[in-house]
Amino acid sequence: MVLESLRKNQQWLMILIATLVIISFVWFFNRTELNKIGRDRVASMYGRSITMQETDRIRRLFELGLQLGLTTNLASGDFAGDQNYIWNGVVLRHEALRMGIVPTHEEIEEAVKRLPAFQTNGSYDGAKYATFLTDRIGSKGFGQKQVEEVVGMDLQVARIRHMLESVAVSSPAEVKAMYEEFNAKTEAQVTRLKLADFTGAVVVSDDDVKKVFEDPAKKESFKKDALRKVKYVKLELTEDEKKLAGPPRREALQKIADKMEALSQAMLESGANIDKIAAGLGLTEAMKESAEFDRETLSRLPEASITGFLQAASNLTQENPSSDVLQSADSFYFLTVSAWTPERGLTIEEARPGIVKQLQEQRGREALDAKVAESRPKIVEALKAGKTFGESCTAAGLKAEDFPTFSLTEPNFEAPDASKVVEASVELVEGQLSKALPTPEGATIVFLVRRLPADEKKFETQRDAMANSLRSRKRQIAMREWLRVGREAAGLEQFVDLRN
Image (cartoon, rainbow, N blue to C red; front, side, top):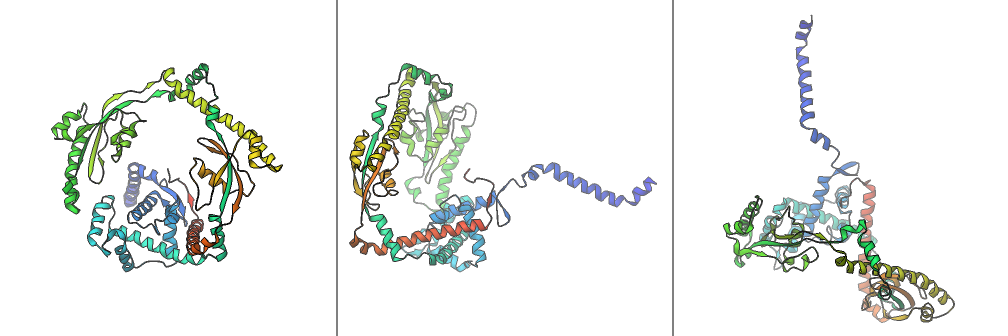
């Protein structure tokens, strides 16, 4: 009976077994892929998932826009100048399609031809475009299709910006108010507390130094960095080769790249000696050695101007003594450690100057802050009592100084703290005292004496420029607000901080 039943249902049994085998195969051999499902989701917009691949593609398109010089619209500060530019790209695609803003192929083609990067004597140069596609972006996986896509997006931004310009209207009263804000003369006085006056009075004892030196939490800060030297090989195009373009230039660069790659691979072998390897490759004349350096003095080396040298040299260690091959427009470099003196702990005498300076600055700043907390209320009370700012400062044991008259269009930045004085004065009214403004030299307190009316005669000559400036500012605000509202309408929910 059992055998007869099996024979009658063998077809369905085989289908069941085959199905189970397929499911098992998918499960056991693709578990890694299955585990990835949902992990690549970085955000949600318009009710759909935004993946890391999509955000990376938008990021690369914006980078291409910068290379093309599209800084008026797509790659402008108000569209791509903040951390939201990727989401702005998603909003642009969605909203432009919804509003029917879809440039034609002919419009995109004409816009490409108008790009300054592809112009020679005011006319489109197809050779420059071809060179850009092959030499500038070809290695990044970009081509004509991506250029046209980015230019199309730029046209979409331009049309949306044009639509928003209707709200960017500046009234005569607004223009006049803006002129007054930027051109009114400001008379101010300051009182400065110098940090040096307080640090100079700080006495640091031997016990103070010993206590800091022996603090376990600060042990790592009392070390002398490793000293090292690097040998490096530089190969570059000849002057004649630098004038080449297209395939001939790529061929010349490839010959250099092949030789440098051979050097790099040979240095991966155990016990590799760069002098012998360079000699075998005919690179002895191209090899040089740096002076001894640590992390603090690295940037002062003559080689610091070499593209990528600082980062590559700072990353070299005894365990990873050789760099990757570095490439700039016309040259290649390779670095390897040639001498190494390990880091060591400082003695207390070596650490003493740094500890003394640290404690003096710390305690001096504390004493300065205490003086500010004591003096500023006294100045405020004296001003309320009808005394001048100079008299109020004297009563508090400080000295008042006149600050040169200035306006926002003609600021005076002669003093080290001038930018802070100008910035603080914007928020003050006549007769008002600022909070203490910390500076590297100490602290500054600003007193706004008065504001003088702007020159009316100059307003007539600047009216149009101010009106254009105000309209431009409003256009930027309108675009940023449109994008903000667009992100909200899209229901943006971000799961990953793309800055990381």
